[in-house]
Image (cartoon, rainbow, N blue to C red; front, side, top):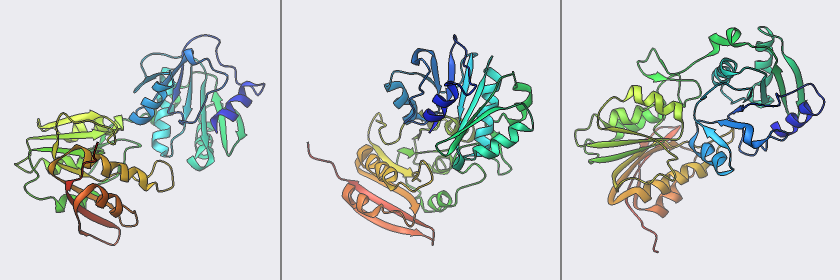
Amino acid sequence: MIDARLLLALDGDGLDLPPEGTIAVFHPPLDADLPGIDKDRVQIIQGFKPDYDAWAARGYDVVRNVKDRYAACIVCLPRAKNEARALIADACEVCDGIVVVDGQKTDGVDSILREMRTRVTVRGPISKAHGKMFWISEPAAEFFADWKQGPSLTDGGFWTAPGVFSADGVDLASALLVDALPENLGAEVADLGAGWGFLSAHALTRETVKKIYLVEAGHMALECARRNVTDERAEFLWEDATTWEPPHRMDAVIMNPPFHIGRAAEPQIGQAFVAAAARILSPQGKLWMVANRHLPYEAELKTRFVHVEEIGGDARFKLFHAARPLRKRR
């Protein structure tokens, strides 16, 4: 991955990082070691809470957003092209030296390289481990100003941003779930993996709701949710939903849990959400959940709740209602 390309680039293939100053690394993969760079000079830019916490646990300085100017920047490309462009624009804006771009072929690095070559002189590339690394040696903020993107208002009337789940429109699974929510949700509700706030906005139309906690690991998604959900009953929490500890037990949990980090489906993520819901609900609390039909959540639900029923859906999605969470004996 990036480690092999970084070593090759620094070891005689033309990449000369400045000897002093802070080096910002945008969204590095969790398994990266960043060889050849002194840890004390690195600041990790990471807005995804589990990854933020993991890098901090390794002793790195980690921030959600850029804080200052940097002697050099390294951008690790995400899968979403618009998000990749935005990160490159951010790096160029705050960097006084070299801006390095690294990515896998499966994440579109070749396409980004072609686009950047039409705007600036690009050094490299280094090709290794099914990816590429290349860099800009001259200041380039003006050439990528049009790539900058933050929260913006869509034609549908909601705020979203590149890299946020369902950025281009309302997710069909979430739309199914809001139609199935009861009028009486209870007073205290948690929206686990709240995204840009679609489920919470609809839950707040229920008069029984006195407080809703939007728990979201993606900082940009949460910033969008703040714009979409302006009800004073909403509280916004930048947290990993699978480990979040509420101030007290919830009456209801609503969720459309994520099921992948990369390209492959990883049902254990959604299963962890189910376990978290059972943990934070009151003894009479209820879960309302939607999932892709092919994902195996039934066994986990039955392990965690006394009552589980499928309450609808369509060919692609299934809706669940679960009640009376089971507590593990100490």
